[in-house]
Length: 286
Image (tube, rainbow, N blue to C red; front, side, top):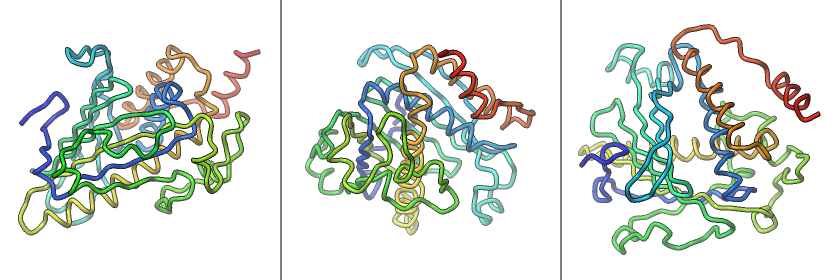
């Protein structure tokens, strides 16, 4: 079945539903803007020649059910990130995952069409201030609850892949002018403001003999690490986006997406360094 966000992943298509709960040291209203900055900067940071994320569409969208929102369509080029055996089976540099996202904050829906036939991923997201342990926020049936696994991600304490770790993004060590960092053990009970990002992820690969291994790998190695990395970055970069207006953040988003697309397409990008960008902001404020 095809939905607006891509192939619909029915609960029965996957062996397990995984619900990720990610507390964050900011409010839902703040994070609505923060995630725009975080996604754009993360895409720019992760992209390189013929690899990374190309933004195809990023525009306002009106849903009959949910009202005004925003639609974003990305091609995620995998390049050298693929395992060597996959490259042999699927030669060429143009292998990509197509991601379609409908953002009706504080609810979002994302669908992913994989380059691997029959592998599809669906992510439903809800954001709630302060409540980090709502039992059934997605109104799942009892049979779905029986197959659901809950994973709470601690952006300060959980182990990030060593290849992704950066000291300047370690929120357990960073200090912040806003006083929200560092995040020390037990920070979730002390942080004010605080919100929780709930993500229900269905990863379906209904192929006999491979389903268990592939779906577990997608959830435990890919999705969980991606969520930890991205949300840790969002908190580490808070001082760059807190206090900006939506127009200011959309301007930054447009610039970063333009740089990202040109970089993935092989063009030279002479982007300002972060120090130069911060200096420009300081000059504007004074």
